[in-house]
Amino acid sequence: MSLDPQYVGDILDDIRRVGQATGQDEKAEEVVSRMQSRIDAVAARATLADSRPRTLHLEWVDPLMCGGHWVPEMVEMAGGENCFGDKETGSFQLDWEDVIASRPEVIIFMPCGFEVKRALEDVPILSGKEGWESMPAVQNNRVYAIDASAYTSRSGPRLVDGLEIMAEMLHPELFSGMIPEAGALRVYTNPAA
Image 1 (tube, helix red, strand yellow):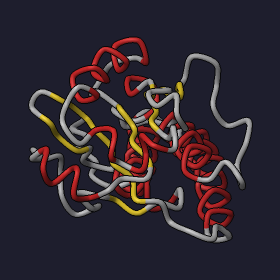
Image 2 (spheres, helix red, strand yellow):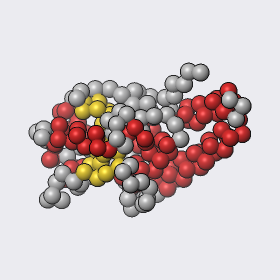
Image 3 (spheres, helix red, strand yellow):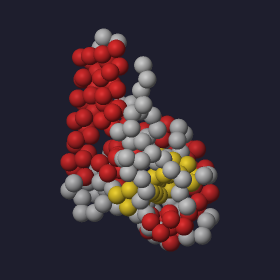
Image 4 (spheres, one colour):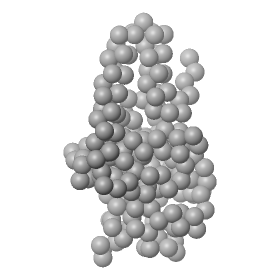
């Protein structure tokens, strides 16, 4: 069975397909129902936010690439505005000058398939570049690293956890307690903030 989801809804459909192929239709529908309820809860609460922070999601830093597949859709559901990409485009390479010009208010390091510890290795690659300190996300200590292997890179039920984690990163005034230990980390790069 070939699974190649692009959207969050595709992932839910794939769970149903796997359930059907394995004779576990009922169990698959239970899983999908729980996931959909959590997705709807995040999306509904995110609409209460006063702002939609410009969000830079970085799937890779050398070469510099934004997140693709379902990641831009997750940012939208969590109450953010994508600096690059949308749910119709895949991951693509970015120019540093364009990143600076996008003035991200939140930056999320999510190297494809890696954990937080590996994501932290990417921070110095960008933090030494000209213009890093000028970005609102850096000035306001809203730079994060997430366990992409668990929460953003793989198409499965834990993407809903990733959505909840993003919601807390983007709107801590509305969401709390969503970030599991070792699931994500705020990167403090600007002691003046």
